[in-house]
Image 1 (tube, rainbow, N blue to C red):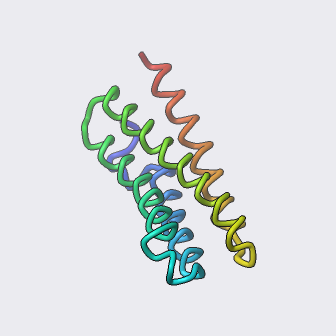
Image 2: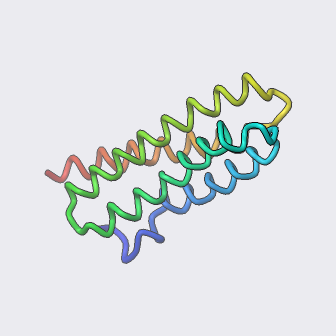
Image 3: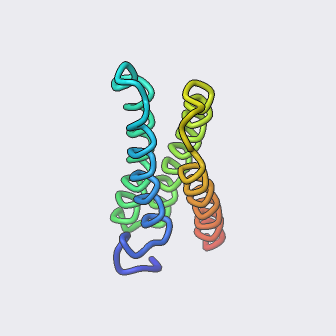
Length: 119
């Protein structure tokens, strides 16, 4: 791999920042959302760095790619949930979360493309 630890991967570091941003933004949701959108967004966000870490530890490039693909899908899930949240709770500032999410998605696409090219 490219790093001694998954913690050195920029995409993992940025996705940890994204988790924190999602937790912060979802704090502004009504308590009625605790087991709805709040929980779903947090789970999707946490899934991103978790899958990056798990895939990295598998030691196989193909398995790593599979887990990066899952992380990418979780990012798309989170993107959809942010769109829904913006429609429901428009008074909240989603820009920091959206910017981090977009950055993580771009890095994942590039990373997956580069790993696929090594076949």
